[in-house]
Amino acid sequence: MTQPALSVKNLWKVFGPNAEKLIGTPDLDLSRKELQAKSGHVIGVKDVSFDVAPGEVFVVMGLSGSGKSTLVRLLTRLIEPTAGTVELFGENVTAMSEETLREVRRRKISMVFQHFGLLPHKKVIDNVAFGLEVRGESKTQRRARAQNMVDLVGLSGYEQNFPDQLSGGMQQRVGLARALANDPDILMFDEPFSALDPLIRRDMQNEVIRLHKEVGKTMVFITHDLAEALKLGDRIMILRDGQIIQIGTPDEVVGAPADDYVKDFVSDVPKSHVLTLKWVMRPPANDTEGLDAPTLPDSTIVRDAARIVLDHQGVVRVVDENGSFVGVVDDEDILRVVVAEDQG
Image 1: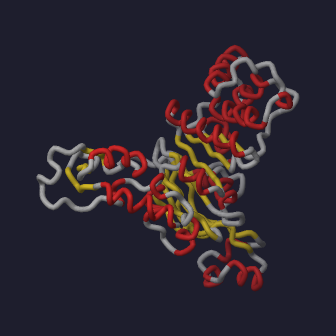
Image 2 (image 1 turned 30 degrees about the vertical axis):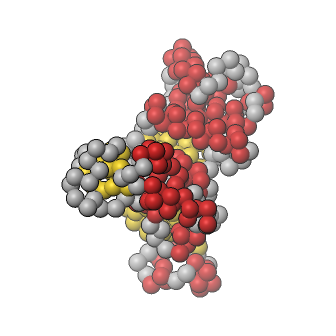
Image 3 (image 1 turned 90 degrees about the vertical axis):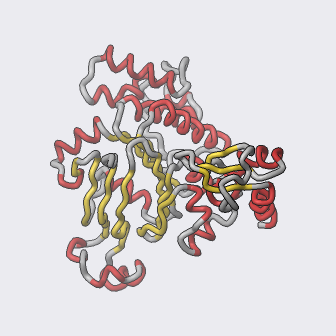
């Protein structure tokens, strides 16, 4: 079994004096409001455990106050956890000395925030190279690496501009290039696009998808936007009041919401854009059903399968990742999803 890139176990953050003494007590079973009224403590993150696989885009989603931004800061100990462990490729981040932690932050983790945090007095190329400068790399090395990253994020020709000469979307590209320049093991994004207008935001989401295909980095992405989560995430973790409500792939979250809270969240999602054939196929009547029909993987999104299925005017065979025949779909199965969307 592959070692997780990130492994979080029983992570707590309780704000307030002597918070660690509350861990393991019945008080933590109280609601947020009850605990605050009784002791003045506030739970930010409540007994959270999850793993992120190498190369995965893992999205943490929730409304304001759900604990998602607190969580991402706990992962790098920008905020100290009250209890629990965080491991990065098997190394215990929660037990590291300050010196080791600084080195990990410099070399293994890069963060991209909503507020770009660019240095206004430095040009684009120098902003991108800043982390390498802090690490002590030579000017020649860091300039070459920074130029590669500027080219990668589509900012060639803007190297000598200052941040205030760039649009918001371009400034966020500089932030992305700076994060990638350090060649980190893991990239963490804390609502990086929420200040951008919708069109630029969509472009930046597409940019993250493109960059992930090109560089394959493990990514933890924080957002309050469901559409963004569904677009970017290999898996999505939904938080409410500091607790995990559900972890699943986009189609699992939409197709099998864990409770009414998640169901309400995903109620307006166009299901044909997210659900895969796995959710709409039916068992084959026998091994020869649709024998000469087209074949589609069960991971095919319904919208992408629709034209093939509707054009065929009969059953289409569905196979799993091993190529085994697992089901069939026809135009009625496809249209049932699309009609349900229109009625919703």
